[in-house]
Length: 253
Image (cartoon, rainbow, N blue to C red; front, side, top):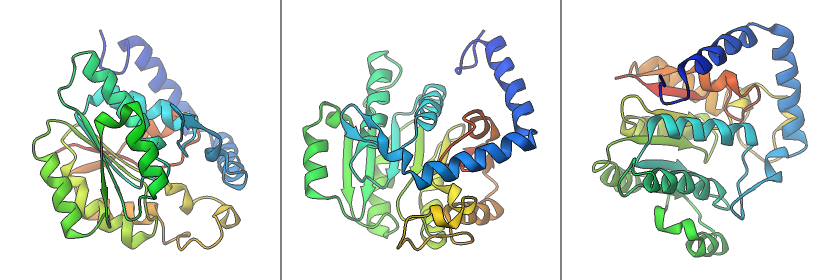
């Protein structure tokens, strides 16, 4: 038997280990130290996905593919494009699902206030571009939200990744605008919630976000006002180190 994530006995063993790991205070300290080091050393900038800088850590990439396999979305919405590696990652996952006959006409929609011309060109020339739609503009403007909502309306299963401006105000506005596009049983991942937890010196100079003005503070407020979502500890805890600690939420209703 399987639950979409793997053989049932295997998954149960994973859940048992995760529960023990989550209660390990010494391990929690190690995770915190490692997350600080990753930010100080810009570890997430060391990787590419199918030739494009992805700016994600490998632990998260594995976690995201598990979530995508579980949900089998035909739409993934991403705010924040940068070099496009995350779009290429999501597109490759959807391409596989389509090849396997599990979804029809899947698409990744990427939204960014400023899509640099060289990045746009590289993404458009990539073999995965056929599964990608890019929209330039503020992710929280009514016009842009309306465009994305129009695409989501025709899709069966929708997943959401928020990874643009990391201030409390902006992330909260994104959650209010996009979260209810996520279909029941699917996930929203709020990236860089670790801003709330890491050493302040590990935050890149010149950034507006900080402890108390972060994706995690926005997510906390959102969950207090929206009862359709719950925090998902399974995906958060299993990676040990993630750029979205406490940032995985699942829509239940």
